[in-house]
Length: 322
View: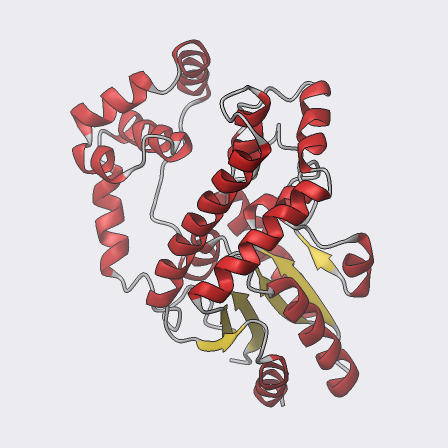
């Protein structure tokens, strides 16, 4: 079977993934004369309305090379993990058929793992039950679903964060339709080496995984600088404009790091811009910590300093493709 190259560029937020992806793509195109497509797996870059707080590549950067899965949805029309896996798999197959090198770039670890390893089975809920659940959620929030899990799937209840409404509802719906616990499905999945990307559902993919990171103290300074830059680039005004356009503030994508804190600031829950900066920095550090914890478990991978190892990264990628 002929294998197709897949280059993954992963790592915590604010580790220079976008710039490295552009430089790697340019090197492949210029030195190997091979066409390249950059496929995003950062879940917030899917959404057209979110730019400043996501550090989305600029129009100039997006024009440098073909990009996929950026600005493809409105935040009122969520693009979940299953949507991503189906769409990304189809477009990667299409680009491989045209002999294009794929560079997967992002930090949304669960989206990447779902694409590489597959997802543990979850049933399709009936339209009638879906409407009932949506009505319950709109009227009374997540309380019913948390209590349901506590009664019927205690392990899911204990493992899911109370704010992770999407996964809580998904676990409830799975039990409603099958009377089986989603946590049992997860156990089977976890038993199958969930962090070993060499065992995956794409036997024709030849994966080269670049993991970017930056030492903790250096990274904290970069995060601090990035937060200040986002606010200077009018992140608050970006959120205000979305609220004026009818966004409620309850949509899942806008309740992400950075945007959530700005919503609290506009609601008066955060009293000053100094406090806003502090909250955003803390939330971003926590996000980076979670990403780092996940990717440290992933094998195989090649680890690099996101700022200092550009030449080695390009050299290693070109050697992989030759």
